[in-house]
Length: 109
Image (cartoon, rainbow, N blue to C red; front, side, top):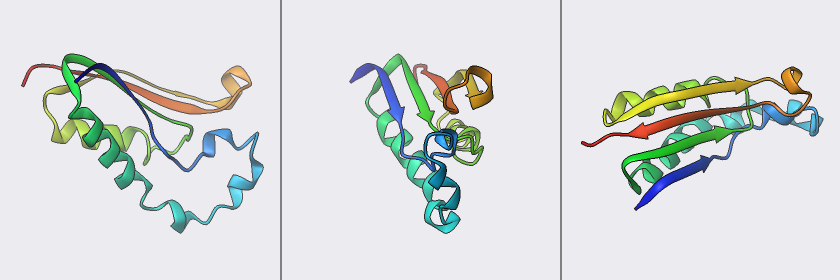
């Protein structure tokens, strides 16, 4: 069991399009199942988190289906977890890559 877990999940990568412009030509069908995979990783990882532990979910995409919607699906299903903070960072904000993170806390069941 862990006090903190980082889930830096596989994603479509649309947040790093500046460095990898070929991403824009990705076949969207190839990433359609990404949210289900991400949710499964989040669910599996959460099993290893202690009560009062913190889980961080992160991606390098700006796609809400892979970010906010995955986190919300997880929170809807697992009531012992609460969203503490979430943020989408756009490349234009800091001149770097775009990414998303959510900080989730586990409370006692």
